[in-house]
Length: 107
Image (cartoon, one colour):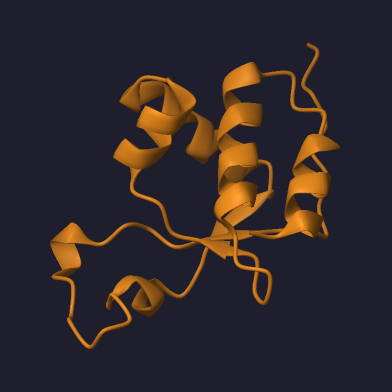
């Protein structure tokens, strides 16, 4: 858990409760050393109580705003115990871009 990432996420003005929930969830799961999180969409869905479609749309919107970016997908290749996760079963690795800030689109 990255306290810095959580604090940053709370400070974002996104204009969307679902985007905020997804960003906060990623921040909660982010590793302190690299601000990377790698949850499956189904985990985000279950823990935020959002639909799968809403989670996917929120991830896309956060990516478009520059708040998150795809990270090194090889980080999701293993469980840490030497087992390799097949490519079609891996979660995406997301980097939280703490150097960016979100602005709500009020148009």
